Amino acid sequence: MTESTRELVIVGVGTAPFDALLEILEERETVTPAQLKLITADEAEADPQVFANRSVSVQSLKDFVFTPEQIVLLLSAGEIATEALAKAESAGAWVVDAAGITRGDESVDLVHPLLNATSLTARDEQDRKVIAVPGPGAAMIAEALFPLKDQLQSVEIVLNQPVSALGKSSVDAAAAQTARLFNGQEPDVDEATGQRLAFNLLSSAEALLDSGHNFSELALVLELRRLLGDQVALDATINTASVFHGQLANLSVQLSAEQPLDTVRGLLANGARLEMRERPSAQDAVGSDNTLLGRLRSGLINPRQVVFCAASDNLRKDVAINCVLIVHLLLKTH
Image (tube, rainbow, N blue to C red; front, side, top):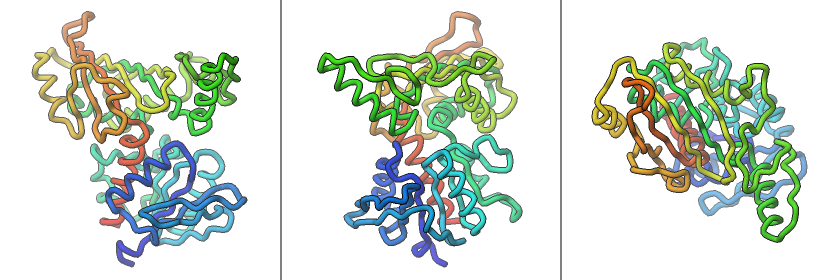
């Protein structure tokens, strides 16, 4: 079967990254409307979606038949992702997991298309046909740190994630809370976090584990170890900021040897899809295809420490573009 007749199946219509994904697929002409299949968990009839000026119907997962020629992209988490993964893998289809259900599974390759895409072409026939995509925070931070990979000794991360990192329901909740506050009304709390999202800054959007970390912080550390190597000591804090889209991380890096700041700046400036700015913000990054780096400075704790920040569009760049690049590679090479 040729590349032009294979199908891309997207499981997760209406999820936070869904619109950005369709936009990138259309911009890059990765697939045609005839090749695109859209799946939802809801058995009720869903509205068709417009793609490349064509109407594409939305089908129920319950009734959908997977085939070996398909590439299945998981955007929804939870039971629908687990069920779709099992059905697609049983049918022999390729699965690209952007929902996070296989990121900690050592039998599944964690692939960042700019950093380790060669793993897609160097696969054994016995390998599972499942690819895990890094979460948005891990994708951005790994890109930012990769030019320094061989010199990294330890990294302390403070990631400020937007409410869209929590899912579409939290975006809707934050919007409703904002509207109520502007109208002088007391807003309801977000059901997922139990806290107010509008005009707030959360130290943790999740319950805390015995260590004091939350699950997402430990998952971020695990993903970065898989992308950067076990030799790097990592710790992470994830705050949730009252913005809808765009993320920003402050990175405190200890190098194995002292380096002039100009040398570090040169390495970062030459990194793949990295753009240096004096004072980047999450808003600056929204709509951009690059990770913005800035505020590079020497740390005050020891001479081997450098500190800088990274900002990116968590939906467009770190989910949609990365997924489309992986789908493109699979269509070309498998």
